[in-house]
Length: 492
Image (cartoon, rainbow, N blue to C red; front, side):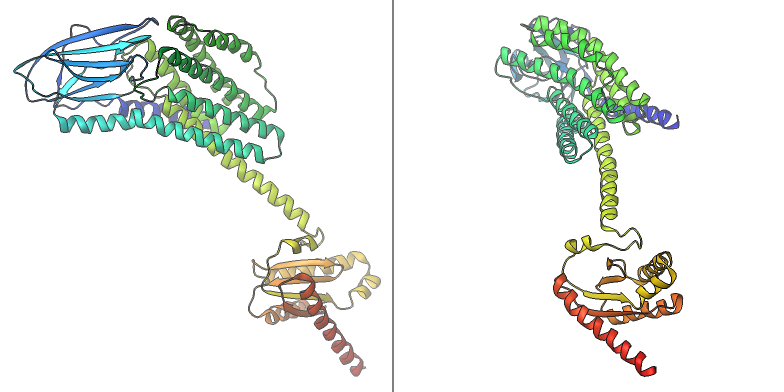
């Protein structure tokens, strides 16, 4: 419960912080323009429309016009009857751009006309103002980063996250986890497509192509929610519980794809956007219900941000878009999930490999590790003296305990980068990078004599290739055994 409250609180805090940064007040050194049309205004009927705003102002030393949050496709600015600025065409996207327009040849009394054309919607959310060029430049650079530039950052984050999600999903064996991350990747790809609608473009070539582009964006946006919910449920429950949402979205997707003009497209998307609000809330509920903790924060923040964006369509006084930030939060959350799951998969894989390569009795590596070792260091071959007699006299249980005790002594004295291997029975090997291998093995031998009253023989050779190193070490080991045997006979 604490994580839920913390995530909601953090999402709300970030929402208000970003809203504050995006809606920072214009500079104090400015002059707001008065127009014959009250601001803000917004009209979306799907029909092409042009709105003209006219203002008169005195020359007070301000030479730069700043316009923010235009809905439409083309902007024209006239100063004293002369066209001084034009941006966009019938199919451009200008609604996420901040305009800085330098006004030259100002008179004592001036007339300013702003003409906004929209092929399916038209509006202006903020009051244009005049200021000097230097102040306008600082203000526009600040606004552009948090608005226009961050859209491209968000697209990049979403695309990279999609690729990482696909790579991770295709590399793991767990079928449900694989499907989940492949679905997250599709969700992130669709969000990148959705975000491309907010990027500034001077043209989309022709109205038919522009309408097709808008339909593709809408289809990607609505489908992304389905894939998100699908990925979340498969991730936690291993199957898609909310299949019914497909039956809701299929008719919507069909109607959007069949939109034959902007009027029909606007009517359909206005309804579908309202439906989308409920599914965003439902997606957040599913995340919390299924306890996908890494998505708590992004789910709440995304729901708030997209609801904020949809409200913007009806109430243009809600001025700035947060969609890019919302999808960036979702993409980053998925990346965090991937990194956590990747770490878990790697750990499980390492444990599995460790289990395959480890001798269950002694904890030493088994012979399978040999193929994975790089050349270098020293090879020490060890054979316990009189171990067979101990087994025959005291039983295998006692012999197993001796092997365990011996292995414990070796591991306690062996540097971490060295390898301790059980070759079979009472035959062991050490591959060490210690500069004095004889000193190392004699230290182990001394402790073994003292602690378990057992001795061993050994042979040392340079390690480059196993068979060759084993042969040389084995010769030295048996030479040592013969010498011990001769000493024992002489004592007798």
